[in-house]
Length: 355
Image 1 (cartoon, rainbow, N blue to C red):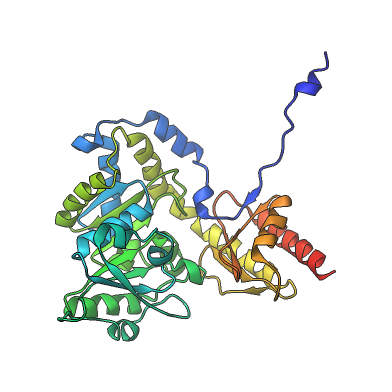
Image 2 (image 1 turned 45 degrees about the vertical axis):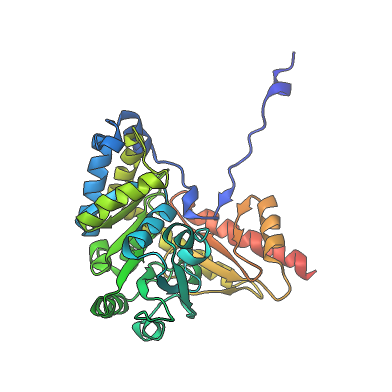
C-alpha cells in the first residue's frame, strides 16, 4: 500500500493581518497556563487571577482591577458604572464602543450616544463642550465621555496627552465622568514614551485588552477606584462573565503584561514598512501610521471585499472595514518579510484589475 496516498497535504499558514487578536499564545504563555495555580474566582480564591488583577492595577495606576472575558464586556461595565439609566454618553462617531459593540450601552445601561464627527478620532474639549447637556425638562444629562486610545478607525492614532488631560479635567469640573477605552493603550505608550499609568491617569475608568497587541489568548482588564471595581464584579456576574478556575487564562495574561510590551516597537516598525510599500502601489492611499494599524484606500471603483477575497486566495488575510477601505494590523506573529509579501500580493491583485 502506498502510504503517500493517505498523507494530509501541508499548507503554509496564511499571513494573517486581520487583527492583532489572531496571535497564538507564546511558549512562555503556554507553560504558564499549564502550570497555573487555580481556585474559584467567583469566591475570589484563584491566586493567579488575583495576581493578574493586582499587577494590572499597579501598571495602569489605578486602585483596583477586574479580569473580564472581553473588551466589550469591560467597556459595557464601565459605562454602567459611570452613568445612570437614560443619560447620554459622548464619543466619536467611529468609536469602537459606538460602532462595533452591539449597542451594549443602550441594551445594558439604558444610555444613548451623542457622537461627534472628527477627522482623526481625537475628541477635543472644544468639540465635546458643544455636545454637553446639563439635563433639563426636555433634554437628558450627559453622564459620561468615552475616549479611545489608540483610535482604531483612524489607523491607531494616539491621543495627545495634553488633549486627554484637558478633556478629563474639564469634564470633572462639570461633574461628568470619563471612560478610556484603552484596548491598545500599550501601543500608545510605546509610540509616545509615556507610561500607561500616565496616559490613563485622569480617566475615571480604563479598559485594556490582554488579547490584542499583548497577545494573550483571552481577556481584558477594567481598572478604576476600588469601590467601582467592587461593583464591576457584580455587573460582570450579571453579564455572564464570572468564571471559575480561570487562572489558566490569567497566567497567560500575566506573561503578556510583563513580556509583550517589549515587542511592540517591532510591530510598529512593521506597520510603517507595510504602509510605505502599500503607498508605492498606483492608486492606493494610506492613512498616517502611528502604531500597528494600517488603513488603506483602494483605487476608485475597486471593491475592498473583492480585493480581500483575492488576497485570501494568495494566502493573505486582510479585512475590508466597509466599502471604502481595508485595515491591516501587525503583531508578533507577522514578520517583516511577511509584510513585504502582503504588499507585493496587493500590487499583483491590483495589476490584474487594471488589465
